[in-house]
Image (cartoon, rainbow, N blue to C red; front, top):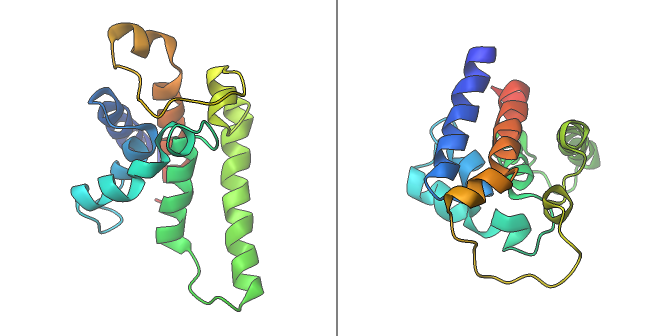
Length: 151
């Protein structure tokens, strides 16, 4: 299983270094396995970067795990509480694994930011950006967790 995890983690990290946001990086590492073309996967996950549109809420890498889980094993019957409950328990377990490894699933907490208003303008991707941000490691972690869980 480690070979698969490394494949997805490496791809997600690579996508992040190419400039894609955290959600896109994780989600698009799985686009072929999900039966999605790359462009559709990019668009679908684009709004979740920076903790949902740079609101610094749930980490985009975590949101991507949830989207992948939904596509792989989500429910389609709106009135079946047992199926919904099992799916939500699965999502909570993914969150618990990520939080156990990283301390939180909240973007601003992972980045050590104060709870204030955040600019919608993305930070420039410089060498310093990559040195000071934990995002690449968080992205790799999320890709490993979901690949271990579903693939």
